[in-house]
Image 1 (cartoon, rainbow, N blue to C red):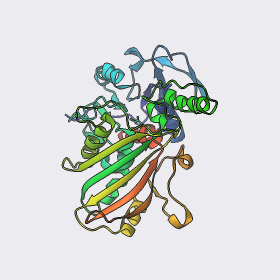
Image 2 (cartoon, helix red, strand yellow):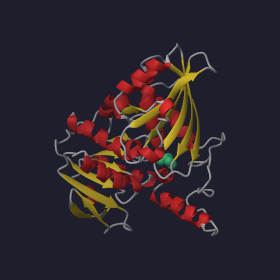
Image 3 (cartoon, rainbow, N blue to C red):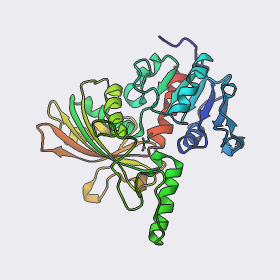
Length: 341
Ligand code: HSE
């Protein structure tokens, strides 16, 4: 079912989850990109309501997210967790607003488009009131895969992720700070947001475990990549690991194609691709790294080289600020598509 309500040129925008790591970044991205909003409402749980934030040079008070707080809204950017998105979905769509949802609540529903503007922008226009923002680790990988798929059909992708603490939220990022200090000062460590100590450690466990021994984060990378790229047959194997990095997810990606792809052609295609910056000069020690890319918008690709272990393979290293392109920026880009149309 196509959505019939036209989008005003200057929509009223709500950010639900405005005090969280992604919600705060959504407000920042709306402001930095000069999004043509008539009004922006910062909404959050009752616990965070009343918090004061700076937006477009003014102080804004966060209001409680309720059905009435959504009245008159045209675009509702949700990043308050899957249960909150499920709770408010009907209220948002019944009022004629479009929900752009950063949670995993609706991503695999057939009539909910899962959109990365650089890859499948057209899908945004077939929604029935809800558009899903993909998982952060999936977004940055598909932005790098899409230009390669145009060179030759991809057969299989094997990815290992190195995911920043902030992917688990602001409190998790704080836990990394606090644990690092506690560890260095010899104090006992009690993990709260992660299953184990995150300071000076790597944890191959993001989201819950599934019956087949994989994690839900790994499953998301498989099913979401297939849906966004329109390739239900694509073989994808993922191992997702939390690392003691504050911001920016990194990924080691091995891509097997059905026909030959020269690394130089891949590099050229990635250089031309929207939303991609190639940093790939091994002789000059140049490659993407999280510490250098916090707060950036592009997906950064380096270490592009042949994978000799398969007939037609390439390997690459992909880094992006997952709070920006992996979440807030991607959501705002989807909103921009709706306004432009
Ligand atoms: N699932 C990701 C993470 C957050 O835990 O890093 C992306 O939305």
